[in-house]
Length: 423
View 1 (cartoon, rainbow, N blue to C red):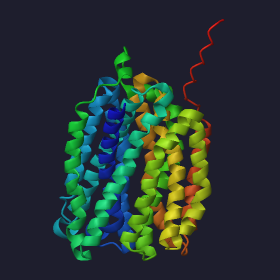
View 2 (view 1 turned 120 degrees about the vertical axis):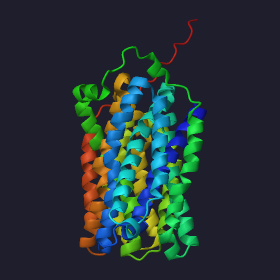
View 3 (view 1 turned 180 degrees about the vertical axis):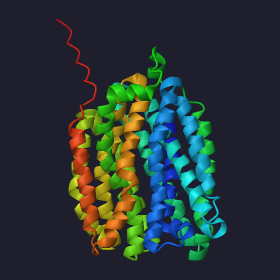
View 4 (view 1 turned 60 degrees about the horizontal axis):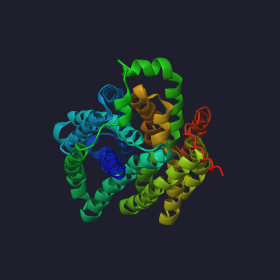
């Protein structure tokens, strides 16, 4: 299990590095480079629009790779998704700007972002299923949480590289070529991840299935349609909160408040490190107390913290901004630490790869794709404190809370204690 968990963590870290480095670049530099004829606000919104395309592609990726995972196995999904995401990320770093090739530049950016999302849509389902289906029932949430640490590692790596380049290079050089380096660098860990995953064994639960679904998506829609919608609605809050604090807040603090790029990236990265460290602990609580109680608690925490969070962000003080972001990410990981085991347990094994991945990635569309765009527009219309953003995030959290309340618990019943020997 440690070896398998490490391989899953490494793979998700690499893929989410690819996904997050684009979000950071969209918040900091892509607007003026690829949409120079727009106003600064419109250029940022357009850059976040290309960011959102990755989320739209993720459910399609979950259908494509979910079909492969339910028909051919979880292991092939891990290799194919990593290859697609890695190649498209490296290619983003090679796209000429609008000044060089005109309208073809944002169109190429849009296409490559779509391919990134397609690959990531397959990655999550394969990684968590391979781990969850190998794990013993009493520690399934714990072992399944390691792929959930991967996004934190990927985020810190992506933003660490951006932070180092931003601090080391003059503004004009960073805008000219420095932002491309993190995209080019993605090729090295992607190749290492492919080598690491080549040695993994197939899920024992998949090998036990005698009657594989012929068209998994059709079966999921026909037999589990309500469950897919509920899980998507339940996860929307987590996505909205995460991308509000890790993507929108960068653009808001650097553009609206005048906070330096280095300070803001440091605040966000420090909070994400704490979130990653807490992930296994929250998963242990999920093994002990159940998956659904942790999800309800985290979702309620998001609803209660969003207004205080935007107030803390609006101060422009690094420590207060850090505390606002940290509180949001702790509430987020209380939910998402157990999602990697909760979703697979909700679906029967023969369509689990498709069902869990589609529900997970539809939640990303509902909560993650539009949040940076909506939050940027709401913040521009408000005063110094973007109360509209806080209200928007609170509303999504309340909807997700209702969806979680309608889902069942899935934690396996503990084994009965052995009777004492007679005499």
